[in-house]
Image (cartoon, rainbow, N blue to C red; front, side, top):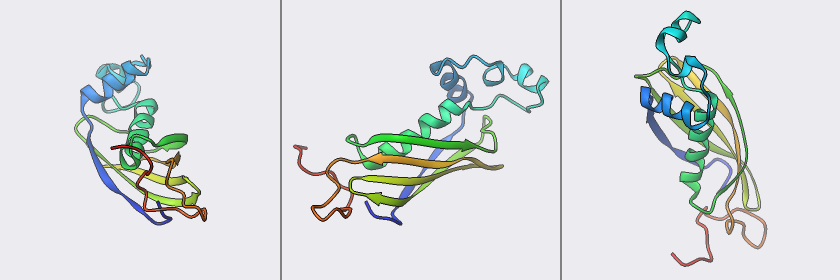
Length: 145
């Protein structure tokens, strides 16, 4: 885990099922996340993803990269362009800061109309700090595989 390390892209197809199930799972029953007519009445061309689903996808992106031992300490995101059904969101990330076994990762999620989400995720990856306090190669150590 080093400053400048880039996380591989994660491509997420934005489906109606993803949008609706994410809203239901996060108990967000706002009609704009499941009712096309209601969303259109409120000025949107279609239903759109809620922030809690986006937050979960960003967290998944970071923990998938750093492994099952990774602990999210803070997820600070801002929404931009909506995620509509039929589009694709591509998440990218870059390690911006490392202190011991904790890193700040800048994350951007873009879709066909722009940046859907931007933010910073603070993650601790136990076992990644060396004795000198600098970051190691990002592979957790010390456990049985």
